[in-house]
Length: 445
Image 1 (cartoon, rainbow, N blue to C red):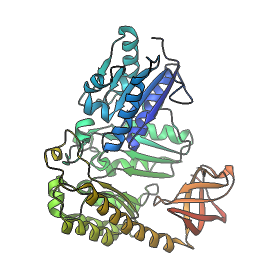
Image 2 (image 1 turned 60 degrees about the horizontal axis):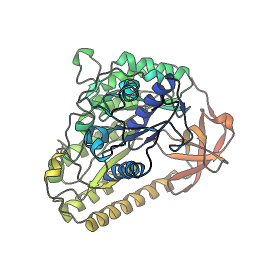
Image 3 (image 1 turned 90 degrees about the vertical axis):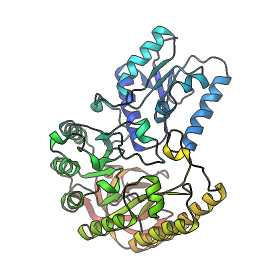
Image 4 (image 1 turned 120 degrees about the horizontal axis):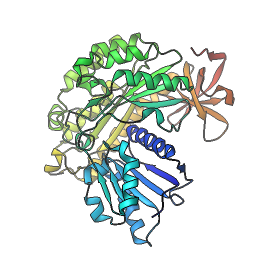
């Protein structure tokens, strides 16, 4: 098998996986490899996978299966990401043509693994259970030129009963604040205007390292001092770790956007307990009320699972009522699917698929009604938009407000990477449509 010269990485799942792909791509380019135009044309093909949803796993399994039915390829094939951690050696048994399996905690060993495969002509497995901070973040090959993601903590200690993340990403490991600040300064020096801080639970940052005396809100205050940085976002959060200090930081810091992903998951206390969410609906609503008191213009996002084992119709209606009451700007809604290795897998998946589908559809309709009303309220308003790129139509520019609303408007290429004041005059589906206010450019610091 020849030393690969080109690569292609197919990414599934969350923003953390997208960042991991950028980190792996940086390692491969440092090795002298170049990005191929497609997965059919590369010497090295990596599937960076997700195990959160059943559909993502089935897509990868289908692709790997089809590859194994043809003649022996000369392409090196690897599986990385959460599916690598969840299935490990089982992937080799199912797909004998697979060359390596690389876990989420072993990304720094990608080059070594490739060399071992080439030298030994054998399958190679690397899936450590705990993450050690050893990644070359500064060498990541970034896909975007305006905004970038920065990892601040990996793993999760919450052990929600439906979630595989603690088993595929391991325990929480915070990254040293000095390293995060250095990377963010480096990105700003390269022209990046917006940074999204990533973690399975970003707002528990620093709790595993009390000797640092640097919790999440402390880190945000440090990043706010970086000259030239215009916006900071973060995801994902756990409600238990959303503190008053964090709320006050959102209110007070120039760079910190007024959008909080605040996942409720369910509106029933019994289901929340069964999910091991470690809060009640009442505690959650108290935190939402406090956040809106401290930051009146805040927008909220959420995740909700319907059809969790034993969920009754009355309990589902509690979730519907919570959605109507809280009125999220963004909601990611899912029907429950059992994930192997989670505690919930032991329970009977007793909600019929047609019931799950009907409940999901009802939630989607409620959220669409809320979103439609919110979009109508924004007509005539002028909003700050960070311009990211041209829209697909090639005629409009595209960007987002501080509260994560997508906006398109006509403008010039010179506006990309700038902040513009845009007056909203319409919308198409979930996208706001507007025009730049005369003299609407905001000087960048």
